[in-house]
Image 1 (cartoon, rainbow, N blue to C red):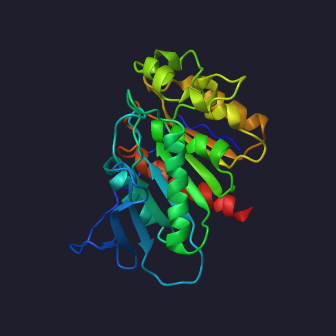
Image 2: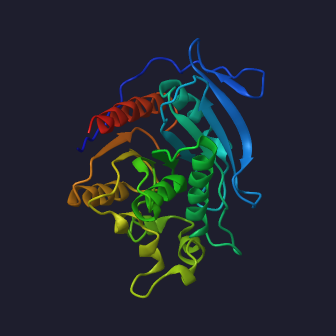
Length: 286
């Protein structure tokens, strides 16, 4: 399924969020609460830390997990960028587990891939051990984090545990001529992918492009792009949608009014959360 929204209507005021003074609890209303663990190490690197939120309602039902992945051009950023949005999502999905993760950043001495894919995999292994079951995953990222979300879901999810991808202003095809105007594109070409991981017959850019790995069994995908984004051009949305359509993947695509960093501003954030809620409900019916 495919939808394009060009005009966004106003939504009610921002969600009221309250974090209790105690370090181990988050209260988001009278009947919504989570147990909180911050800066958990899921690996040995200093960058391999995450925040974990588990609903405090006791039930034997296995809960799905949202994994939140921040942006920052693959070589900067921090999970704190998504803390408020994670809390807003928790308000609407009180029966889900949430992870807000950091990952090893790319640099002049460290490649982004496959390290960042391995970090997501390490988080899933940590969750399996922590929760004592192997949860279904909804991976949500913005910008570079959205790129990592899609790439993991389409190529690296060997266990097929990703039930949906939420792509927020993510580059999906790094070979797109429009994306080559990205001011850090030379870094993408030289430091995003470790050349030793590449097999003969595929370029580093194609290896790192999520659209190149979409197949008929790829997970449903919801995308959100800015109408005046100067970082990730509108051609990225079109290329991604074309690949999803060609492989008959359930998907929705929306546009918000604004640039690359405006997706979580009011009312764009509430519009997105509403669409995610409906999208997940539809997936669960199938």
